[in-house]
Length: 492
Image (tube, rainbow, N blue to C red; front, side):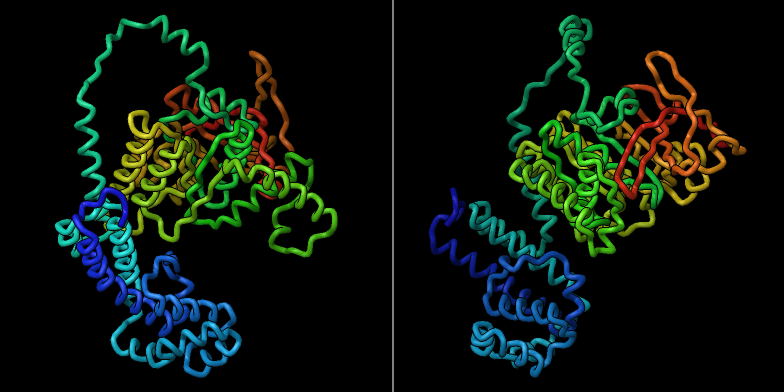
């Protein structure tokens, strides 16, 4: 019956369970009916776990439809289902036991596929209610309150309850004398405790921003095609492996296979000295030399599998509320580093003042990761405004109307490609210098190389846009190297 359950007897527990199922099972039927009526909806289906079905009949119909679609059936009628089930006698037996095609045909008379999203939300809600009941968090009074609430509202209810309990447990307000303990503070700083996880192969950038420090937020902004995701992987993943840390990467514009391909390419070219162009993943038909280095790279990563250094979480729909839950969950498990690729307006927000919603969401993210909360580091990639494409000098205003999202960030880095007229001999030539000790020497750039410029737009631990970092970031080979620094004149 679960842990210390609010319910007094097993009979009461079963009574509430039956009531929940009386709401949940019809929703399962409606979801399956929508999918069979319009099989293409399987492709756009929000995440529905087969194990979360309570009624085996609708689980069977759900599986049959999903597997038929995989085999190329675009329409589910009595004949096509019968032909498919000839190859699956166990499923056919259950199918006939549950009324065969007549059961689905009856569903078509009262369901409308346009309502699928609503059915799925209810499906998740009632599954959550079952879990709350089993774990002992649901009493009869709560059940009555929750019938008309969404799962998000139920989550907020319990979050408020738990926060209320613990906030009253911490009644001591601490105060500190500014002039006390300064010698100890200096000794602490001497140990370098304020330095964060270093960014890989980035001595100039690390010197300026101090790496990824716990309790702080880093924003990496760029326009499409500049390499926000790839640069994030190049800077963070190798360092996570080197220092045996754990990182959770939340993605909403890529899939996990894309991230894995990026890292395999990085290992092949940076660890094993290869020259593997990642477009070859798309083309396939590898030659033996490619097979050798790819297998070696995969083995390198697989040997680290048990450490769970990097966890990838794809979101089917981006919601800041979901990201907050993920950070809360994994930070409680000891994870200190998080990546959100990409921060944008939540899909559950429909407002003309999108910039204000994004600003509020960024504040919520910071409140979740700051030292007095989970004390973790969050690295967010963000899209710059279209107007920023024409800018040479990148600053906060390149965020467009959402520029105030930088307010809570400790570090803001923006990237753009160096233009041809900024190389030697061009009308806007940039003088590039390589730091050597306390001096800098002027260097020449390779005409054929496409360089990237990094602007440190905000930096609470150092200078901002005192100079720009010139980077040779080969996005085909995933090779990243700081070349030197330069000064880009401001746009006027």
